[in-house]
Length: 259
Ligand SMILES: Cc1cc2nc3c(=O)[nH]c(=O)nc-3n(C[C@H](O)[C@H](O)[C@H](O)COP(=O)(O)O)c2cc1C
Ligand code: SF4
Ligand code: SF4
Image 1 (cartoon, rainbow, N blue to C red):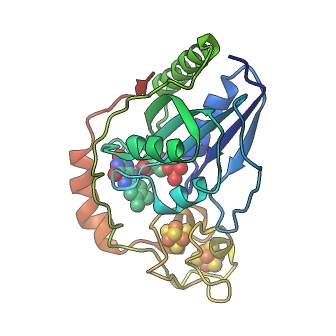
Image 2 (image 1 turned 180 degrees about the vertical axis):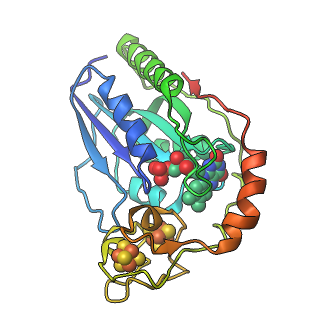
């Protein structure tokens, strides 16, 4: 079938999902407009997408699910029998029901998923897990996914009957967030960078050394971008949880694709 326009929508607090989304975009034979769903100030009104558009949705996995903030932003977009590629990016533990949740969500929004992928990247909390990924083997798997998805789409005359089966089950795994949140220490120079970039609006602009723990989704963006390295999780995360988690999640997992 004919595709005239392509869009890549991604939510990516620490950048790995954005990176994988760009690899997919680069593998497609047409220009792709990128739409970053990460900023708290996110606002976009594209009208709805049509049946000659292709939309690529990419999100990280939190607790085996799609982060609520990403879901609510995706729900601002509607398709009209619009083909979609759906991808989740996870930190080598598991993606549980995230790809299924993403599939179900985009279908409700009027999209028709054609292909799905679950890819591995460095774990944004426990960075020793899947460190350096996506690596060359991952990039090759992502390119393979893109090629197969595009060939499938190009070979379809009518996508209305398409039903994509992915891994996952309902009810989805329960995720209530992680119980630890970052705090800024004495090195904070109140530059405001973290407040400007927090996807959840959890850092007050006038008091950037504070964190609204109810709003914070522990996405790790503020820790990654703080120029002073002033933001940190509680010490016990690094001293007690990290060694256990790293041990449990070291065996390498590989990309999975669904067509
Ligand atoms: C709050 C939180 C929960 C996470 N839960 C999972 C998980 O359930 N399984 C997993 O393998 N990785 C998990 N991760 C790791 C991320 O999915 C992974 O690092 C992803 O690449 C982050 O994407 P980003 O760089 O676009 O922010 C979690 C990360 C965070 C911050
Ligand atoms: S980015 Fe770092 S130094 Fe700047 S306000 Fe935030 S915590 Fe402070
Ligand atoms: S305060 Fe929480 S939600 Fe905001 S950037 Fe930091 S970790 Fe992410």
